Image (cartoon, rainbow, N blue to C red; front, side, top):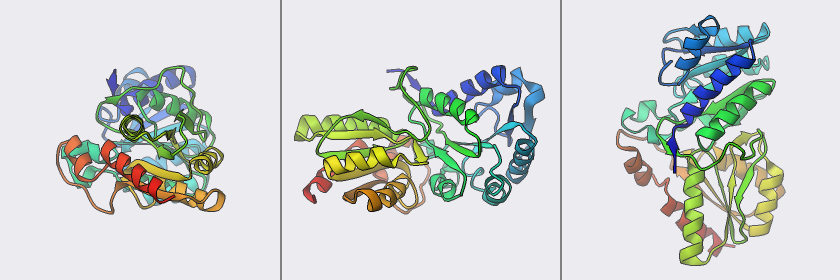
Length: 312
């Protein structure tokens, strides 16, 4: 299976957007290579702005450009944007519904040796609480490219969540993708596993093990859009299986799991379990070691699925 980082899909899509839309502008906060916006900068230097280590200015400039009719893509690490400049995003971008796209890179604990200060584990919570903001966490590099292209066509602020490490590319160029529409990747009747980002592939692996070792039929849903949430698809699956497990490389509190729980509490209340960061900061280490230590693994999804089935 091919391997690629979701940030690579973002960089490729930026160039494609630059070629077909002269209103697309890319802004970087001193992380041009790391966020993969370098190719756009080299090909379209007149539409690239390097603001330096100044994330608040990054947001302010992007808001002004959007209100002047452009489509700016802000590129930085997620701990800095939407982390450090959350107030500017809230007031200058979301309050005005400015047409700004915010690309948060190096998310999750799998950024590894960079340590807790650079592991964005709260960015979904920070962005999904903001009015007018759409929040998208693509599952692989191909989906990241589709999400970037789709964001450019969606009027209003959009947060795009990307990761640094190489990850399996399991979707195809023809796989369906639409912001706000979840994709059922595996059909099942015993439990629903709802995941986003790199945990989607891990969830597919867990579903395979649940079937082979335990005779459990798990339904797996790629919930790449956390906001607006595809409540119709999620509720239909929850009513069918009667049990839900969510999986994300993010804090359990306020992330995908919280969004799903809020929606199902009104539409289809069922027993739930959550796989994610357990209300803790990370630490420096190799990606797989950290994922195992903090329980964001196939084994944890399998265990939580078996547990939630018993509670039905």
